[in-house]
Length: 109
Image (cartoon, rainbow, N blue to C red; front, side, top):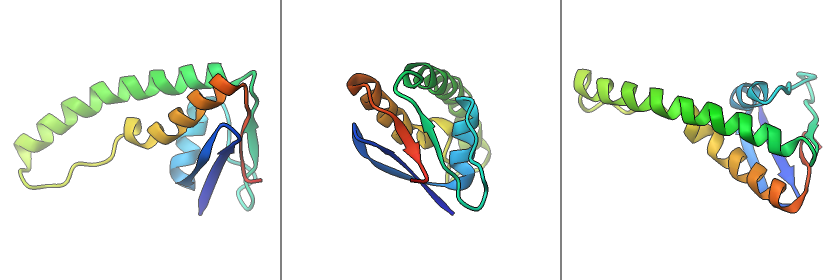
């Protein structure tokens, strides 16, 4: 299932539910109810959500770099997996724009 994040400050960000669930859990939100998930990060909560998501992406980036280096040495020619930082980038960008413009971020509406 696809989840589409929306804000008047940025273009829509579609994302698979499994990835959206992970990113939302990092900012203290859930993707519920399962059959029709809906939610909001209010303009007042956007800066805190952005800080949490950026911190998680930065931590992941360091770990992913080490893992990618080891993977290249162990399995040359294998595709690298997509890390949290790459998955979070579109949502981070949306949250940055929403913070700048004082806008909410919603999904499922």
